[in-house]
Image 1 (cartoon, each protein chain N blue to C red):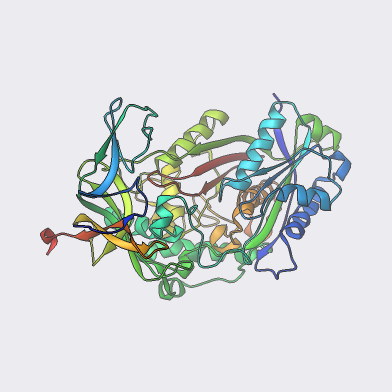
Image 2 (image 1 turned 180 degrees about the vertical axis):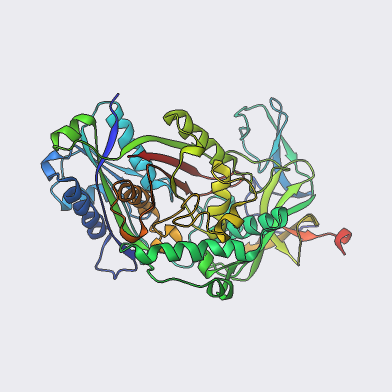
Length: 381
Length: 130
């Protein structure tokens, strides 16, 4: 089975775009950047994988038809906020199976003209009838975490301060200005104790990568590129009473699958792109994965352990909180960031000795379970 | 007594007696919410329909201040562990704290096209917490 390499990465800046900047336009923009970075032309691409949630039917085919990739196998992948990472995993499987040597993966989303007030579960899900906005789940998580571990509101807010500080140096980030702890604490409440700056924004944007086999890499005349060591995917399970609300069994299972596939362990990870859709989510998911001790995540954010230059830099890109969160694009944007970090192209947000990176996405909720989908992708130099 | 209307979803709410519907699995012995043909824990189809415990404890809570229309804010959501081992989410009326005891109650969430009430569930703090 072939190894899978990341030959090129590209993004369009995440943010809020006018109506005439369509889903297709965003996706094509990111795809062209990734193809240019990889040095491939349209005739080199053998298959196209597109992750999105709100793009509508055959969005991937609409994109392919815009850029001379019509006729190829094109597939659309929806796993809510893990859609982009799931598309990458499907491409990784196909390359490992020997089907293709060079493929294009795009994550894209145009949210600002389709979503307002926050994202929710599917209307048929019981939790939607009860009014479960995503922020509410994380508000309950934060309250329980503070109660169980004596964590402070300030420690949770420190995640937002850190991630905004990181993306000051990310030209693709929606927000590129630092914020103070006071701003996070004083922001209007969304789902208490969490406020506006504890929540990732509703964003437009796209990210893309060109993945290839060893033969594909040779065809491009490249001797090296970051390698996808493995892609884990799990789904949520029914949770019973007397389970800690922040047990994060779903994260633990995703991590264990990733360690099994790659042979690496939590102690090997140099940097993490973590799905910080909400501040508290970064904390409890790092703990669930086993890369931060349980109950310590708040302190790690506060004391700089998860800052660039710290013990385990998390979200050097700014994460979802500050890079922005066009849901289907996020998983691919994480891999763009790891690609740039592992090839020393991350500029002023470069993490020293970035050799093994981990990207985590969690997508959606299903009533009664500990989540929808969770992906863990490991990338090495 | 509920004399008019119907459950918003018949797999969730029972009107007489009032309560939440669930299943008990004959294979793995676990209970779950709501009523459905297969056990969500183990997949077995040997399940008995049951009325779930009417009381439980608050695992955590939040007050939602921003939500998409037609939801009207603020409202309180709670995660509750029922006394028979089922965890579920619901709205709460009145103030609650972690570990408070709460009881299931039915209320009219909306009406159908002919104006008849559609019943749903929520949680209310019990005397024990006062």
